[in-house]
Image (tube, rainbow, N blue to C red):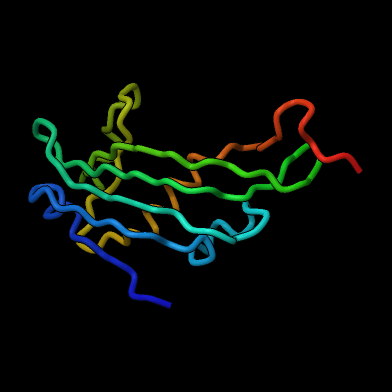
Length: 140
């Protein structure tokens, strides 16, 4: 086990800070039901920055997850190459976030759990019903 990184999200963004590392998939408990196995790891980078008047976080993830194919139930390697931009807003302004905007909004927190953020972004990126390409499924 290791110490989970926490950041003051607004300070992190306003001061252009960056945190990077690697996390074992086995450490991301919410993924257990989605993955065929939890072998492997993800490289991550979380960057803070300002865009106009907005405090922002950029999240980059790279690695491979092993999912379960919904056709053949065999293992399926899924390449993770994710770059997301997140606008930091106070909780009371989250409902006002422009839904037509291509930037998602999250609550600005003084103790933002970086690994929980990474896990959430990964869960949102994974396909709902992963499948091998046509003709690539294992036959029984």
